[in-house]
Amino acid sequence: MSNLPEPKFAGVVSLQASSTIDAPIEKVWDVLCNFQSYAEWLTKEPLSDQTPRDGAYMVMAVHIPPSSDPSRRPDSHPLEQITAVDHDNYRIAWRNCMPSWLVNAERWQALSVTEDGKTLYETREVMGGIGAYFIRWFLYKNLQLGFQAVADGLKKRAEQLQR
Image (cartoon, rainbow, N blue to C red):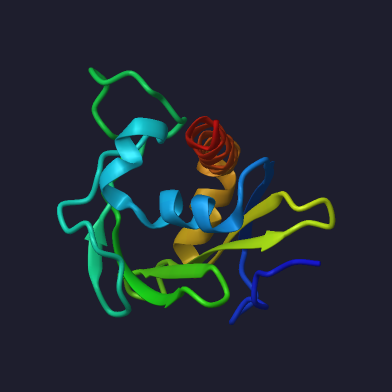
């Protein structure tokens, strides 16, 4: 059963990824919420403000398609606003700050415990607006690769720390 909430709107694009991680949920949550350590496991630059909290803004440096090459400059720097940090339910969300008629996007990341005691990581981003058609036609494939790279990177990092 998914720990992701239902999307707030129907979008033109929906990106999703998941990973089953052999580490306790608390350990995975610590890795996911430690923005400062993202450079250790993710193909994104760390954020300048390292504390995720409701209402905080962040600028991400995103490689499309994903890349761990430190010499490669990011392709995109989206401005996002954190809309939920739910420590009790292991969920975090943010939305983009573009005009919603252009691109309305909301991303959720959630953790839950599987029947065998592992941690299930799930993420989903729904995008609407006229710009979402451009994203679907030209960027969808590489964005989907990026979403799975996040899931795989989180799995690798959390399992390394668990050993």
